[in-house]
Length: 87
Image: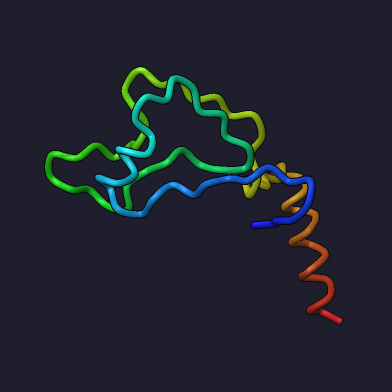
C-alpha cells in the first residue's frame, strides 16, 4: 500500500472474523475503490461471510483487476501469438 505525505491513512480490516466484525460494526456505507467487499477467509459456523453490518450499503466506485477483453481482442491476440510461434 502506498504511503507518504499527502496520502489518506487507511486502516486495514482485521483478519480474524470477530475482530473484523467489531471493527466494521456501526458502518452505514462502504465505498470500494479497487477492492472487493470485506469477506471472511472461510466459512465459520454461525459467522457471516460478509463482514459489514446487514444494513450497510456497499458502493463500488472503481474496480481493478477485472481486465476483461472482448472476444475479438482475445482472438486477435491469440492469432498474433500463434503467428509468432510459427516463425
